Image (tube, rainbow, N blue to C red; front, side, top):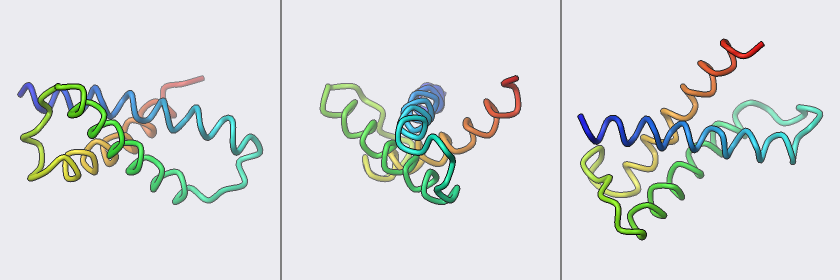
Length: 88
């Protein structure tokens, strides 16, 4: 359960990082959605490696930090959709 909460929390962090990058780099929304989905996976992996390097134990969601990062990225894409629906 702790791993699930960690992954969901880090996914929320990841989606906000991707949203910030998107707001700066693509203000006119010209890039296809797939670019930002790939970005979510990349940021998820970076967040996972950063937290592991800092000494946090987020392992257990996948067979490796890479797997955990990809899981975080996938959940970040889901968070993006949830937050998009509830924002005005």
